Amino acid sequence: MTITLRSSTSFISLKETRNLKTPDGFPGTVCFAQIKPSCRLQAKINSKQEAQLSHDDILVTEGRKSQTWEKLHAVSSPHSSNAGSRVPVFVMLPLDTVTIGGNLNKAKAMNASLMALRSAGVEGVMVDAWWGLVEKDGPFKYNWEGYAELVQMVQKHGLKLQVVMSFHQCGGNVGDSCSIPLPPWVLEEMSKNHDLVYTDKSGRRNPEYISLGCDSLPLLSGRTPIQVYSDYMRSFRDRFKDYLGEVITEIQVGLGPCGELRYPAYPESNGTWKFPGIGEFQCYDKYMRASLEASAEAIGKADWGRGGPHDSGQYNQYPEETRFFRRDGTWNTEYGQFFLEWYSGKLLEHGDKILAAAEGIYRGTGAKLSGKVAGIHWHYRTRSHAAELTSGYYNTRHHDGYLPIARMFSKYGVVFNFTCMEMRDGEQPEHANCSPEGLVRQVKMATRTASTGLAGENALERYDAGAYSQVMATNRSESGNRLTAFTYLRMNKRLFEGNNWLHLVEFVKSMSEGGRDGKLSECDSCGTDLYIGFIKDKGVQKTKKAALV
Image 1 (tube, rainbow, N blue to C red):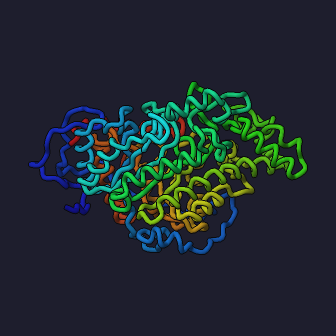
Image 2 (cartoon, rainbow, N blue to C red):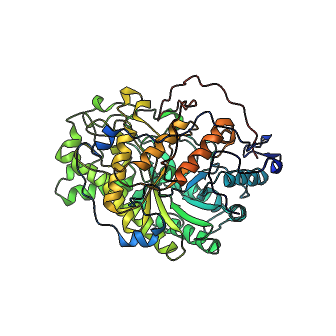
Image 3 (cartoon, rainbow, N blue to C red):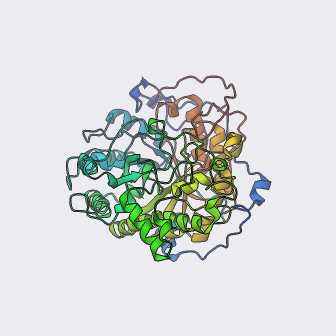
């Protein structure tokens, strides 16, 4: 049965409510009663912001629309001028949806949660297919059974599924609620060859993702990392061929730490990095050093290949505290430009190799591809954009770092998935020189110019109407691409509580109508005090904990 959202009232008869459990296993009942929300949504656009240029007053010329992208994604063209175009909303499932043993976690609670989400009108859900779970028993020994059970459950409820090919570890980053390391046989290879992982200038190794420096080297039981990722994706395709394009409508290809195309420049584990530190370059394993040395020698500057910048500071410094990132620092010299071109170029090559393989593997299946890019908005208002540079995005006052990524995605018909869609500049601490809104505007223009689709996520867990309103404002803006889809982070018991649930239902309804029909939010719930955004507690009264159905 198809449920169309027309109001914020009940979608399930009160007679049909039943006692089930939440994803976290707490009992209770979610009542879909006809309750008038105390806070409703409105997408507001600041006309001054709308007129502002997308990136440091640099105009970007719109490119021609890609015929390949249109064929793959004709259902929701991001260039449509139809203000009422529908934006499907997905919800991310818990990180531990599949257990270490390979089974679906808390299946009854999951079934109940999917029923509730379907009643709210969401399009579907997203799940991480962890490499560390599926291939943990040895090379080519894949266990997809837990995911198969989920796919069938999703299909039963008439939902769609986005699946992330997660080649990174879970644990050690913001929002990670469980630990899922890389496969044991991969960790064993790492213990024998420490240079398989990213390394900073102090020699600190990061085991959350294999260094891109060895992408084409047969260091994993005779296979290259790209071959291993390709075999994994091919196994998934073969196991779920009957669901691809129908139930499984999107494959998000993991490209780095947290699944994002970036270097692990700001690791939170063990307190290494704290917001709003600039991070550090990750180019000191022997394979990255060899590449840098060869690139420097190729232009007759051998001295430039003897390691990364010596004056780029430490993880928790500010740009002006370093010679490299300060206002007129080394980043803007001939050497700085050489290094940043090489560093960001290696990241682009890495993404290109994996996405080329993914496009070949999933071609003709009906499932679209997406890739994720991090929303690194701190120090965005400075000239050097230090935190973006250490992460691999060559984005400065004088250089657009996101257009090359968007063009690479466009080449393979890959949707550009971007975070921090819910953030406002005014929520950020002044000393961090943040501008999530400016960053999102730049990415919207880059994807439009490159003729690739743009999808969005919230970077942090947010339940307040203000966050949803910002997402709708971003989608409505005529500056750059509109969203082809939005994925909400993440499903947990708080999502189904009181006003949190009502806000989600209203948001889904508004996005189904193009994000134009939300009404003004008169109050915001408490947000989060995590490092990316600081939302002040407005003293909102505590809402009743609802039961989940």
